[in-house]
Amino acid sequence: MMAALAFAALAVWAVLLLGRGGFWLCRERDDDWPARLSAGAHWPEIVAIVPARDEAQVIERSLGALLAQDYAGRLRIVLVDDDSSDGTAKLASAMAERLGRRDDLTILTNRAVPAGWTGKLWAVRNGLVFAEALDAPPSLVLFCDADIALAPDTLTHLAAMAVNERRVLVSLMARLSVETPAEKALIPAFVYFFAQLYPFAWVSDPAMRTAAAAGGCMLVDRVALQRAGGLESIRGAIIDDCALGRLLKTQGPIRLALTRRAVSLRVYATLHPIRRMVTRSAYAELKYSPARLAIALTGLALTYLLPPLALFFGEGLARWLGLAGYVAMMASFLPILRFYGLPLVLAATLPLVALLYGAFTFESALLHWRGRGGAWKGRYQGSPRPGDAA
Image (tube, rainbow, N blue to C red; front, side, top):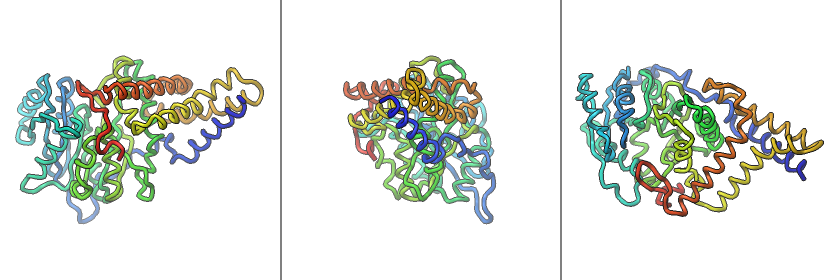
């Protein structure tokens, strides 16, 4: 019995390594993206929309990075203060004044989120309404989280990719913090599992149906978004970035890549905030389905727990199959550890990390069943709404 299960796990790893778009290789990056436009093209005007809810600790760094972009076209920034209680908007305004850039920053206030909308998407929608009301509405809008700092050339590379390849969405997976012990143990796996669900090569291939985006940094074709039905089409989505990716891929090619140009300023000092990050959206990813939850947890156990169990507690063939599966698993984790500059020995901990993520996923379902799903800064938004299952 153990040998049969170990063989099944090894077969799963063969499929993951060879038939899942090379998700584990971390090849989809923006390192070689162009910084110039094709002949005859012009740098389009861009409006950056930044939803911010209680981001006083990071807003000056993230907004300062936006104001420091060396983009050759016109850039306007719209900060949508999502009912903050920590003076986020005042800090942003004061910083823009100090830099002599107050005219480049518009601050809106987001209050009274309507039923059926998540707070973040309602904030982004209000910024988009402002952009569309300008005398000359921009062709491109940047949706950027308030805890993301962009290198000065980021917008140039995003715009060049969008214009040259006619992509309706170009998104960068920001480099997350890996400074604390909890981050080093769990954050690389977060990116790894995301890429396993949404192989970046498949997302960027117009011939594949797979679609996703990374919400921290998304450059969007405004007209294509409007044509697809606008943000109203995904207004209740907890995992709004992937919902936006699916929506826009119906209108044209999209692109998703790893980057070192966009950096997350959010620090997860302990296990608890990482747990909250996962429990907020894990059950939504499973479309609030108990059957999908059972399949996901069973799949995690077979794929990540069975190989080491067979290696250490099996005998004969089962042990050898377990060893092969464990080696395949660790090999698949090495590229993301290299990308984050972490010790490769951490690959051996992937079964334990997967066990934790499985526990977080189950807890996400429990929170949803108790009416406390989708928790984010005082809001519970985890009930199925239009767009959640898009």
